[in-house]
Length: 240
Image (cartoon, rainbow, N blue to C red; front, top):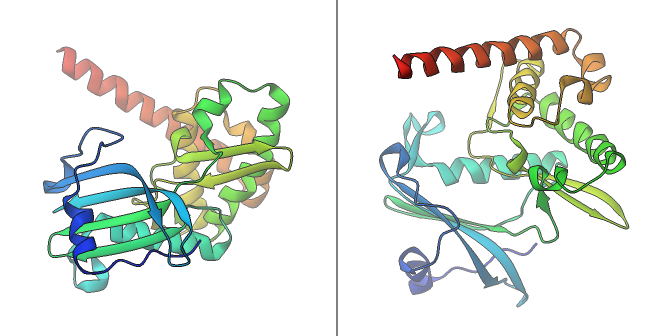
């Protein structure tokens, strides 16, 4: 996908444009973050559907720059490019800009894809098995390089099914980080995905994951059980 040429006043228009957001404004991290769907033109003149994420004072501490504050869309852009280089399907980065405490990221809209959660609700068991057969190698590739997605739930896995087969893409990468071991990254992500997807169990990811990381099945199950105990504990505290 060709990048977008962003110049002068057009950059200010992107920051200031009144656009309908896909979700309520996020007021976390001491600032704001919003996402809108847009249509834009690439350098070669083609029109493309895209997502525009705009942020104001929505930051993280970047160790690369002495732990100075940086917009989280910078980290998301870096993570997209890292997975892209590995061969994991992700949305193409069309533009990233930062101006003072404002920043935005424009990424390609993956047309024809639907999130895994919505897809599960309308497919049969054979299609489910085919999707998982593509999803598992995708996740294994990411985890083999010690990358922990950080927010792996069914809405951050996109699926496309057509006559050519199944494609799987990953989104929501702003929390992605590298762990000390590939096994640690895999345990954290799989436990998160299984907890947020009632139709999945750790057996869906075996024998591939267990063969690659012996003992992973038990570790994932223990992490899921711990998360459920913690949820019950805090729920009781709220009632008390």
